[in-house]
Length: 266
Image (cartoon, rainbow, N blue to C red; front, top):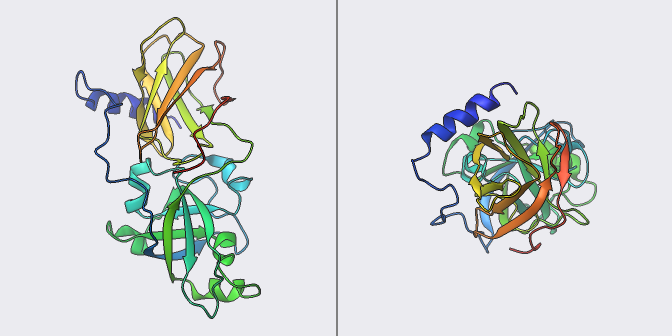
């Protein structure tokens, strides 16, 4: 996306001088322990994975496991201007005549574009056709999809990516003077509230800027690799540092996997 370097530069210009993007959040975003009311519908093909990519920027990852069939677009209340990307929720519907008692776990990969989701205080999910169908008792997936809009309950849950560690995808167009990273596979809270980068031979952590979805960037340099990355979760300010995860000779469009992850609990 050609606009990414410009967006990153403009956002950095808006940061307060001397400000630190790692400042603690006085946080209204902590995970909710109880079931809460919402509405839901579905999109894409009836047995499909929902969007192709979505507003979080995960691209083709939404079509394969562990995202596959667990895709969810959410209203602004949960999307949080993209900082809610990667968070996981359990959802279950309420009509006992067609709904299973089991809950379905979804991953926030997209933002709901319209309808009830446009109201800031209304919680709404647009689920993949497959996830929506899984809410039904066996044999009733077609019936529940024909309902279109349903009432359900939801609650925050820990993300669990089995045998996956946090990965950093270097976005197309990145250079030694402009670096943009997409964060993938965060266990636990799933959301990211701040992100810092440290160059080779330095002790200074430099704040990156959230630009859209699960994408972060930094303008400056030339950046000297290998690069270490520090993540802080949005919900509970948990911190994790991946040392030298971006190699010295990194390339755009490559994905670099760390050796660690957050605890898979909230």
